[in-house]
Image 1: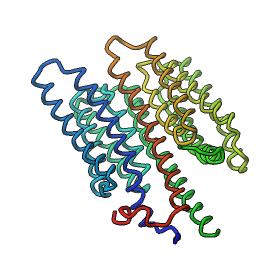
Image 2: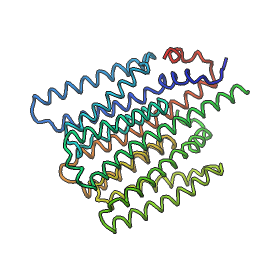
Image 3: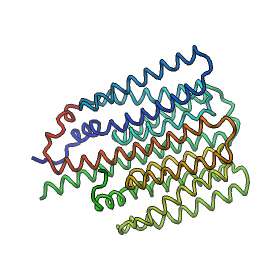
Amino acid sequence: MLRQADPDREAAEDVFFGQIVLIWARWAMIAAAAVIFLWNTGDVGSLTQRVALLAGLMAVNFFLHGRYLVERPANRALIVLASLADVTLIAAGVALWGGYSSQLFVLLYPVVFAFALVFPPRFTAALAVVAAALYVGGVAAFDLRWTGDVQLVKTLLVRLLALGAVAGLGTYYWRIQRDRRRAALSAALGR
Amino acid sequence: MRHPSPFAGAEDLALGQAVIIAARWALVASGLALAVIAPPSADTLRTQVLLILALAVCNFALQGQLLRRRRTLAAVAYAASAADIAIITGLVVADGGFASGLYVFYFPAVLALSVAFPLVLTVTYVGAALAAVLSVAWLTMPASGEQDLLIRCLMLAAVALCGVVYADIEWRRRRRLVGMDEEVVPHAAAG
């Protein structure tokens, strides 16, 4: 028996079906982290530490991906926490390795986009703001020399605008798909 | 499996076109605002403003089609997205090539086309965007830039992957919704 759309159920299904997008986004982040860790590190000691961190990230994502594959995906709170951990780790990477000149901020784009495709707009807006704030904090923690050059400030603004655009477009598409699903359901109920 | 019928593809394109147009407005607004703030030279400003205004005029025409609920012409939509990638590449080249921060505009553009176009075209366009990034890097990248280049390319591909996976999930979800009863997703209701 088909039933009219229930917002709570829809939200639960968004998480149930959509979390694979977040998992793939995290795999991409892990691939980038592997490139950075294995490329940059010269001495065995720090390489060992970074490999341990990489293995930890992979273990978490194997766990989440495995649960998804057996149709027992993680719940909403765990996914939100994992996404917050992702943006925190990226910001920490920026703060530790290069600050303003670090290109690690691009890792935020797939993470925020994937989140926007799964969660309602207010959640996405909150994550985008947190991600932007943590990123700017990471850049500022490394050094503040960039604040004296208007071109560098402009470039930072471009990065943040692109982050906002990615979050906004993800949310827009999420809305389009929700309306489309509801229309399909209404049409089916009217048959 | 993503678009088993031409109708599904046309509807995806029509709805996804709204995301592409929104992404283009974001590019026009932020590009124009950033171009006029402390431009590095008159030549750079002239080139950037010309490219952005051309993009705005084209986008207005497409927005008009959308507002009048005219059928989306696939060829026009595909050509406009190719123009987006070309214009972003032009902006990056005009702004200094590999060192330019404007490459982040590829992210919303790739995001939008990944949710709107059929899989084969998404792969083609993302390939074209990556080729553009690599070409600019080939000509202007400093000796130590390979790692940054690899991360940029990886994340562009990751954003496209998220869009493709999500569009596929939603397609399956709509089919389940209208074709079967609610018992299909027993875990979702439990959250």
